[in-house]
Length: 278
Image 1 (cartoon, rainbow, N blue to C red):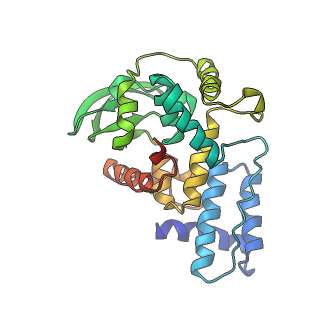
Image 2: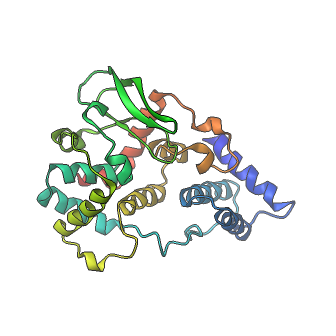
């Protein structure tokens, strides 16, 4: 973690070209990251790490949020997520509750949720090994995968790390009760998003433009960062590629073994703002 902070700070300091590090310069640095097309999560992560760097060095840094244009990228505020989970438990079917967990807790995209199959889930108290089929950039492959106890293999988009993630006890009945054996399209998932919201008491016409499964994903990341989640643990929990998440860091930072991933899951889940709602 220290090496990650230093890597981000070093990249920032190099950009100063001998100028004094100030919050204004840090914000300018983050704006430039956005201008060159860095992802929002990259900017949020860098903002968090730079703020920690400033505080450790007793430099002023305010509580204002990172400079991200959010008008076309809506997310649910915490109170909305609380209402959505409470009502989903009451009014949604097994499939909808399982999908909503994958979205609100694990922050999966719709295209990732529909790739999950029964073979991706280990319901047992012991480690199991099985052959699974996964998508890669070069096509589908079959690989031998070790599943730690009570884990679900997460297939990712956009080059993210594909691995099993820990399922805490209070989520197991929802994930295990659904059979994960239905093939759904992205279009069907988009419709299902609005069905879930309607069942949970949200009027579709009141939702902002560009609403969809990305909203609870952004909510999870936003509130985990506000909870001061360790950046490396968060990156591993979110399955991010390090080179797109940590500017200036070595790509090796994203290479870790499965045990480290499960440890990160448990650390993040301890402070996950939505886990106890289930």
